[in-house]
Each structure stands twice: as structure tokens, then as C-alpha cells.
Amino acid sequence: MKNITIREAFDWLHLDDNHSSGLTNVEWEHLLQFLDEKYKGENIVEIGIHRLRFINLVGIIQLKTVRIEILPKLDENLESNSFNRRSLLNMLRVTKQLPVQLNNRTTSEFEKVDLSHLLAYLFVTEMYKTLRRGLYRSYEQKTDNLKHLKGRLLVSQHIKKNVYQSVNAYCEFDELSTNVPLNQVLKAALKIIKPFVKQGSLHTQMWMIFEMLDEVDDLYGIEQSFLDSIEINRQNQHYEGVLQLAIAIIQSTIMSSGVSKQIAFSYLFKMNDLYEAYVGECLKKLLAPTFYKVDLQHQQKRLLVNVFSGRENISLKPDFVVSRMEQNEQIPIMILDTKWKSIFTGSRLNYNQGDIYQMYAYITAYKTAQRCIILYPALNEQGLLPKWLVPDTVPEKYIEMKMIRLDDVDRTLEDLEEVLVLYIEGII
Image (tube, rainbow, N blue to C red; front, side, top):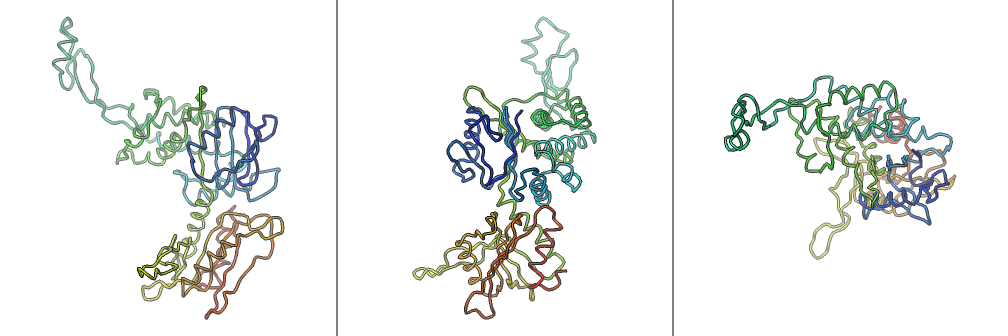
């Protein structure tokens, strides 16, 4: 199995089997087909001559003969991807993007191995813990030709089948069974993740689970409607986390590619959405003990008024609006917007002027706001970040740029606190 680790928006995959980040013709075609089916019309890949790289997408893509791990580009150190992987795991943990708990210890243990091994660890350990509380059973309707009467006698079928066997009874009955859709889905997901279980104790747990599910049927060609039909109730509520993880594994599993019907497994995240969600969780935690409130994706302002209809047009939607509470009324004082991109190229500033126009629209539309800050991920590169005064404003309004660290939530909170503390009382 070939393993390739690349950094989003930085490293290239090559159509060259001899390259360290190269694919064969077959692998290349399967990858392109997979991306076209899953992300058709979305700008998530930059394609060059016999090469491609991922834009705004991180995670794992598993083809039959190659595993591709895509990490955020926060550290350009080619010797190790631990920092980039740790930052991704930290954001996934804080935003609860994984249905099961990911703690600090797990993050530290798995920052040196690819994400497929983490996914296998989370699924097997959570499944083992869940099944040890008892294998879920429910009543399933069955029919059988029995030596005794059980449930309801199916008269017409009984006559057809037992005309020469008068001692038998063809019955329909309900029987408590482990062979139910919930357990079938868990077993199917475990079979998918099986190749990534390498650790000794984890491997033992996996085979113990297979033994527990010995009477559960294997599933083939799973349809989305089947997954949607599985219900969580009071009896199986403790299965909810592992079921969500199993469904996520199965949903991204099967891809038919030409004659070979190559299997692809993927677990992917869009980085701009993940980054925004992560900053939002940190802001909520930071402001919770204060008299300030943060609104996500605020949509109460319009940029222009149509002179013919009198209606307000051009909706503004900043990522975060921080407001001061006065007599149950929110007074916006600060606007924050996240941009998942590098603010430096080497030591040179590399920002999009369109982003500044966007911030100008925000700061002028929100009359009481005095600060509009763009938050970029902190990279290796450092330098003086710009701060602009909006002319002819009283009180003065500013547009600024700041960077925040992402490898540890406490460091992120420190950086956000430094951004907010000058303008918000009681933040410390």
C-alpha cells in the first residue's frame, strides 16, 4: 500500500508512478472520477499538466492501491507533518466534527500517524465500549416451518408445504434477534476500516467485536435509504455516536470505476468551514462569562437601498459580530471575519484587496462597530500586519489583520483574547 501525505494548497500530486507523490494512470483516473462524483462543480482541485493539488480540502482519500492524506499547510517543515496534523485534530476536536470524543491524549498519540489510523482507533474503541454494554436486539418478524406452533399459523402456506408432513406447522412469529439493521451497519463499517487496524490491542478488540457480531448478516450494496431507516430509541441511544461514525464511513466508501470497480474510502473536511467553526467555538467560550455576545453569520444588515422599491438589497453576512448588551439590546462593537489563506508569501504580505473592500462594507454598515478584524491562521512566517484607519469617522473606525495559532485551543484562546482585550471589558 502506497502512502502519500501532502499539504492543502501547497503540495502537488503527480501523474508519475516514479515520483514520491505520484500516481499511476489507473489511480489518477480513479481519483479524478471520485472527485467529480463527490465534488462536482466545486472549486476544490487545481489541475496542472500531469499534476493536481487540493484547495480548501483536508482529510483522507483511500483508493485500492494508494492512501492520500491531505493536511492543512501551517508548517512548511518537510521532515515532519506532526504540527499540521496536530492542528487539524485540535480543530476537529473542538468543533466536534467527529461523532465521538477526541481528547488531548488521543490527539498527541496520533499526530505522528495518518488520519486513517486515528479513524480506525476511534471507531473500534467506541464500538467495543458500546457493545460491552450489551449487543442491541430487537424483535424481527420471521417465518419458518416448525415442529411446534409458534406465533401465527399461516394456513395457506402451511397447506402447501406440509401436505405430507402433518407434524410441522408453518408459522409467522416475532423473535428477538441481533441480526438487525443497526448491527449490520456497524459490522459493514468495521469491515471497511479493518485494513487500518494495526495496533495489537486494537486488533484484538476488533476480532472480539467480529465474534460478538457473528450472527449478524453482511451487507452489500448499501443504499442511503437503508441508512436513513435506522432509528435511535431509548434502548439503543448509547449507540448514537458509533452509529454516526459508521454511517460516515459507509457513505463515503463505494465508488465504481470502470471495469476494476475500485473501492474508494474518504473522510474529508472543507478547511474554510472548519476554520470558521473552530474560531466560533473559541469566541463563544471566551465571551461566555462576560456581558458580550457573539453572533455567527450575522445577517441583519444590508449594504444598499433600492431607490425604486425602497427595499434594502445586498445582504451582508460577516462571520462574527461581537455585541455589547445594554438593557437587553445588542450594540455591535466589533466585526470578525475568518480567511483560510496565508497572509504571507515568505516575508511579503499577500492579502486580497477584495477582502479589504468587504471589511469596509461591514464597518460602514454597522454604525456602532469600531473595529473590523480579519483573522488569518498563524504560519511560520511572521511580519508586521497592517492596520487601517477609516477616514472621516467619529468615533474612529479601524480595519485590521491578526493571526491566530491553531495547534492548541489554549493558544488560540490566548491569541483571541489579545485581539479582544483592548476593546472588551472583563474578558480576562
